[in-house]
Image (tube, rainbow, N blue to C red; front, side):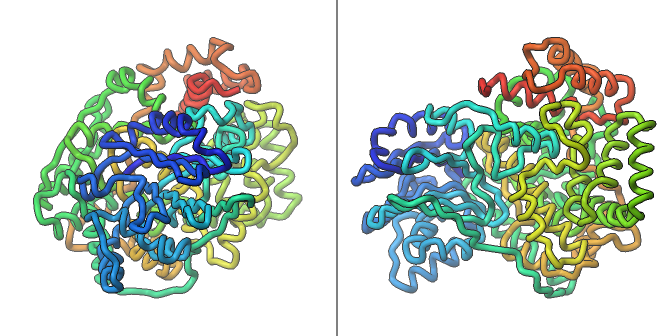
Length: 622
């Protein structure tokens, strides 16, 4: 797992120092080595920071040049089917100098170009330069586990694994995108391809970008989820997942499991223990100050039953206060969820791990979120006659307190009567009404999606003609998972020089999961993810399946009213800490209502404003 950066265009060789600066900004992603390559033509400079996971020798050094010297690869990722691909290439006469996956990926791209991307069962962001054709290929994996950002630069472009690396290049102006602020306040994370920095774009998931000398960049989607159904027996689903976990265990460095005690992490740990050659390490962060927030007993029991070597890391409000500043500095774009991952990643590194397996993806594939049923309820509410909806809307505007939940109900009444808007409201952080209170320059009336028209159209196209459970699954995978969870997982894991893998997003297994009938993603007898539970019934205690979903959530509500209260109040009471386009009176009102009635506002909203204001000050965005 690594960090990549580069510049392509006429006289790119003159930008060598800019790439060096980007690599320095990415040092945390690759403390085990770095490399710089400048093309003979002077059109391309590639940089690489290495976190050594497979083949720790110099033979796996990057940027990696093909044997004939034509292709050069800077690659960030893991290809889980690289041994299978390697054998296929060796049978066709290929020779390899290293034991890892990078050279196999290079060979596949050299042979087949962008057509090879769909064959990778992998998480990746990569840059391939073709010196003969004077062409650059950028690409990301199918679910977007590894980020890749780019910006136009004269006749070429500049790219990197993180936005802050592009800022460090000195070639990107530090101007804020107001549209990105709206999307952050709407969903708790900036929604790509927009980024918080004007002019910088996130390359979408499952997408390649090709830049040829003298031509504009051309983007293409190389993979789309299949809509075909392929029901399987529970045992076959279990076997497929165990095989996926086995693929994700390949490593030349210490590897372990994030074990919360919930369904997904317990299944991963059980699967790993069934196929691992040695003892499996599991890790749980516990909260001594907030025992009701901790799942330590459940995690401990699972680890004992499976024979895992279990590690518990205590974390208190004082710990949070002491590391808050450093955690906020690690955020690459404003997001409300990243600190969770930072804490557990930091704990994993302290426990001696370099790789950890995470349960992200299970809820999206198997219907673990309330959104799978709540979207249907919202659509039913939208079927009320127009006069009734107008009347309810007027009543809410006149008499309802300006709480988050009442204003979200108003959004449901005013949004278009389609599945995508109803889903977006379910995921919204601030309602349309609150967005206009916080940012009066937004203006207008009624429903505000927080997305640009092109992204909204892409979401509508993604789910067109699909039954509701399947549509919600694809929206969760693309939006919440892709735009929040996976980006936070990457950035905060790599901030601690930790590679985090997601076996639920294994290409073979995810294809199989998505091919299950729509009813597999709806609760059965009140039980969510019942198909996954049926597949592993008998492997874990029965009570493990019956507990309500808890998830790994920090006790922020308590902390914001105690240890972290001063941080928020300094922001609220200091106008210089709040950008001029945020309404300070609305910010203060939000904080005061949270203090008097936390449940009516929710901890995530004042926290979001703290994260945003800290980020803008740190990176000097104007």
